[in-house]
Length: 479
Image (cartoon, rainbow, N blue to C red; front, side, top):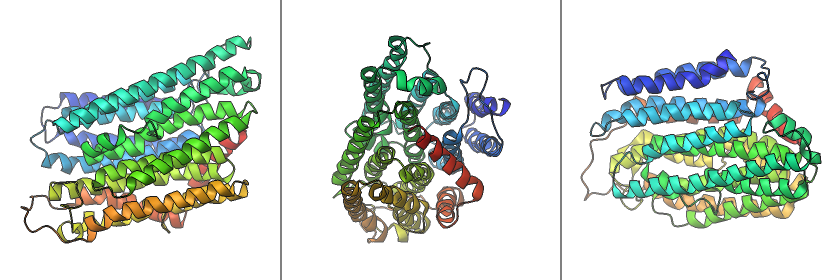
């Protein structure tokens, strides 16, 4: 329990230090220091056998380990990137950004280790509140609009999820059982819970946590928030906060599947997943803003997560693998996109062209990151997406599998129409060149993330493979 306590306390102490340190130049170094300590604790936790806390409120199971590894790795890359990035943004006080990122890291860590649905909900809501000021970092009209949209939709969504938790708790009262919000007891109660109340809880939590994830049609905050936030904030939103929303959905999924009435839940998840991928594919076509393009790509992959839960079987292994692959690939793309944005002072593909010539490292990372995210071999998302795709056919749903492939192909083509001109086009001659240049601390973190997902696509270490398979087995056992 000491390590789990440090997992949440150390980022909070770092946030306090960021508040106290007066220097705008020295303050950002708190981020990589805390990130390294946090990642060291994560590594120890994933290597050690752990038992639930007294009462079962806190427990790091295999599912939590998958999420914790991804969040720790992504935050570490963003933390080192932030040091050099904030040197370019001396016109902005970075106290709120440094504090917000560290508070968010603490809240995400708490969400991962919580087996109490109330604490999980509180932690996810804290991530929303801590990241809102960071979306407004650029302090212009478009960023304040994006911040309010993000706050409004995510807060309504998390309130709807809270209603779902209330319904779930009340279902135990209706069934004459001891009221509880702990995951373990609720899984045991599931076959005895009234179907109507359990279905209502599932629908409300699907909509609520779906808004946090950015599932269509609750995704409307994403294009604005991702488009206006700094690149490292977008990376944390796409690879950190969205995954926490997915974790919340996983917990109610575990309970509902234990009830035995799986047809209703599978149908909802498959329908919502395909709809989200379809909406994203439509909006990815002819998208001119490459940061908004990444937002719709996130909507697509959140749909893929939900679809995998609905399919079950081998797709559950693919979903757990995709948590890591998608999260780290999003880090590559958002950090590289932030560099290109500053180099051209524009997010529009008609202006930001020829990135390979002006910013060779960032341009190359953006291109290869795009290939990785869209499931090209040998990167990790290829293995995870192939597992989900093949599960559709092995589980007797070939129409779902064919529709999924068609939509992913449309999304790939839509993204390529944006990415290729940005990377391979001719730099504009009539625009003044900005002072931005690639540096090791700006290009290095996304390069390391890309290297990791390439290596994991070729060879999955046995300890990590065991964690992923154990996580998938936990989800499968819920059925």
